[in-house]
Length: 452
Figure 1 (cartoon, helix red, strand yellow):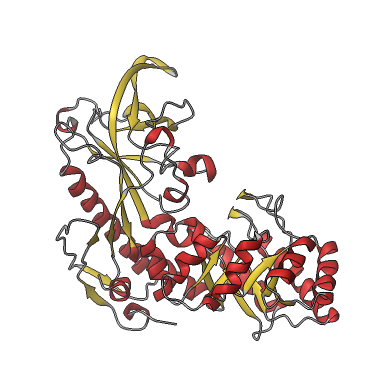
Figure 2 (tube, rainbow, N blue to C red; figure 1 turned 60 degrees about the vertical axis):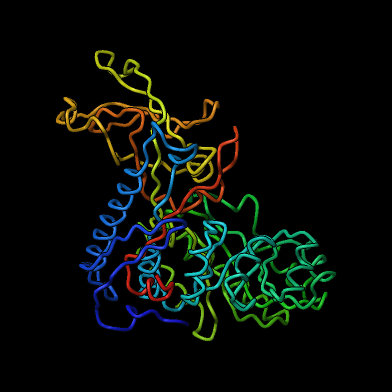
């Protein structure tokens, strides 16, 4: 595994250089101290990184004059901090050192993210030919990819064989027959059913073999002379109950034992995803204890984290393109406003629809804030925030309070926009699904790996 400087060396001063698609913002950060990060160090590092991101957002927004700019110049844009991903990697290594991450490409297939994941020594969880191609374009060996899609098209199976991606999941008999015909040398992981009832995004309705079916599938694979090498599970994206990992590991142990009885030689457990920034220590503690209890050290363990790595690394800025004054339905005495942004649920806020998220608006720039009589009020001003399309469901926030009177041309920003956002954006109504990303690194280790 390639180790970056801050993973193994004393703290050092980081001079930050931006990597940008068109411009160099020439911002240097020469006051941040970085190390392998204990709790206090991690907090201070994140606070400093947030300030840096906010400074860059403000600088980029200030360059836009909506009264005379070219079409599209005021489009929404991202600032992506690769240093945050690096910090999450160090955190993973400190808490789940036994488990090798295979980054879930679907979560955010941004090329810089994939490049950093490859440099960190991580593998890739891919669900399609396109995702396999994106992972291979980083220059990794195909053995660092798992085709974690239990229901694959025959042509994609043939393609996986062509490029040497052997590891893949299955959960039904028909898939085994397809694999036998298209890729008999594949290395198979039986995906088992788990209890994901306390997860934001539940997969058990669609994927996973029950324990009753597991033995039958293992026997069929043995009859077909297919190589089953492991078991996989997924407790659901945004899982809330750490005990789900314990039960899943216990079930996986039963399947390992069944496979050995049938004649398979299993060597890998794939514990899937479901990790988040907020609950990681709690979940990793339960998982680590379960792994040590039920699986000896010679069993390789991998995982498929996505949002854990990238959710906090992207911050989105959007421009206010229209405003409408209305009565506050909950307080008719006071005015309220409907704000219309140049991005919405058909764009980068697709996470509201597909990922059950609730992005929080914050004021990036406000031309009238200095003279606003509302700025000092404790309750702020009530707004609803809408996207630009003609669809009534294109609402970002039905009710929020902001501390200033916002106008057309002002900017809002939204943190934690790195997971399941731009990857599921559409071109509905002809709006763009491609937005500028300003890449930065608030960590010396990430800067060294990416040569920023």
